Length: 361
Ligand SMILES: NC(=O)c1ccc[n+]([C@@H]2O[C@H](COP(=O)([O-])OP(=O)(O)OC[C@H]3O[C@@H](n4cnc5c(N)ncnc54)[C@H](O)[C@@H]3O)[C@@H](O)[C@H]2O)c1
Ligand SMILES: O=C(O)C(=O)C[C@]1(C(=O)O)C=C[C@@H](O)C=C1
Figure 1 (spheres, rainbow, N blue to C red):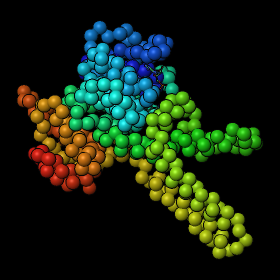
Figure 2: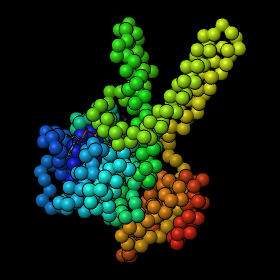
Figure 3: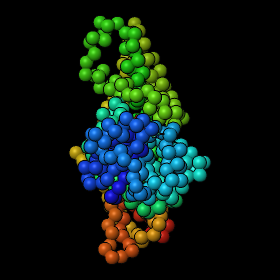
Figure 4: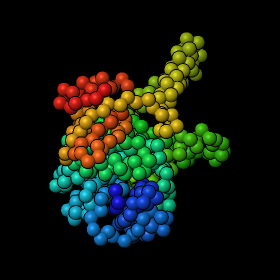
C-alpha cells in the first residue's frame, strides 16, 4: 500500500494515520470538523491536503451511524481502490450500505479491538493496535484486492487479523465490549450523588471498574444504538445474576443459620464464576502467543478467492484467528495459511475439502 485516505481523524483515525505514516504510506486526512485533520497532521499522522488521484485504501473512522453514507459517497466519487471502516458494530452499517446502493466488492468492514476511553486526535498513539485483534468481516462478494489491502493495513498497524461473520461479531462485542461499557457507567453513576466522605475512599478497585465510564457519551450512544438487541440480551442475563446475588445477600442477613448458609453458597458461587470467567480473558496478543494450528490452502489469484475461503470457514463455524498469504513469485497463485484453534482444525479441513479446496496438511 502506497497511499491511504483516513476519513474521521479522531482517536482511531489519527492512530491509524500515525501507524501508516510511520511505515512509509502517504496518508491523506479528512473530517467534517476541519480542525481535526489539521491537528492530526501536526501530530505526524499524514497530510490534510486532499489526494490528487485515487488512493489504494480509504479508511472510514467515523461514528457507526455515519459509516454507510460515507462509504457510499466515497465509492461514488471513486476516491480509492478499496474501502474499509473501523466501526465498533458491523452488521447494521453493511446492510445500510447495501440499501444505499453501495458497492459490496470493494468494501470490507473491519474493527480493531483497541481503543481508549478518550476521543479525538490528541488521544491517538501510533502503537494503539500493536498485538491487538482486528476483526475483518469479508463476504463472498468481497474482492481479493480489498481483502489484501485491509490485511496489509492490519499488518502495518501490527495488529492480529481475525476473520468473523458481521452478526457473530456484533453479538461477541455486545458481551466483551458494549455491556462492559454500560456496566462501568452504571457503577460510576452510583457515585454521582454519593457522600463526599465515601467518594474520597475510592481506591484502585473502583478506578479499574469505572475507567470506561469516562468515555464519550455521544459516541457510545451511537455504538449502542447500532447494536441494542445483543447488548440488551447480555444485560438481561446480568440482571438475573444480580437478582440472585441480592437474594443471597439478603439471606446472609437472616437470623436463621440455614438461610445464612444458603446465602453464603450463592455469593460464593458468583465469586467463583467470576474467577473462572476472568481466567478466560486472553493475555495481550504477543505476550502469550496462542498455539494455533495452520491449515494451508493453495489459492489462485482470482477475484473473491480469499473471501470465498473465509466464507466457507465461517459457514463451518470456524474462527480464523490469523492468516498469512504466501505469494508464489511469477505465478498467478499463492498459499493461504489459515491459523485456527487446534480443536477446530479437523472440522475446517473437512469443510474446505467438501467445498472443493485442496487442503495441505
Ligand atoms: N474509541 C474506541 O475505543 C474505538 C475502538 C475501536 C473502534 N472504534 C470505532 O472507530 C470509529 C471512530 O471512533 P473514535 O473513537 O475515533 O471517535 P472520535 O470521536 O475520536 O472521532 C470520530 C471523528 O469522526 C468525525 N466525523 C463524524 N462524522 C463524520 C462524517 N460524516 N464525515 C467525516 N468525519 C466525521 C468527527 O469529527 C471525529 O473527528 C467509530 O466508528 C467507533 O465505533 C472506536
Ligand atoms: O479499552 C478501551 O478503553 C476501550 O473502550 C476499547 C474497546 C473495548 O471495549 O475493548 C471499546 C470499543 C471499541 O469498539 C473497541 C475497543
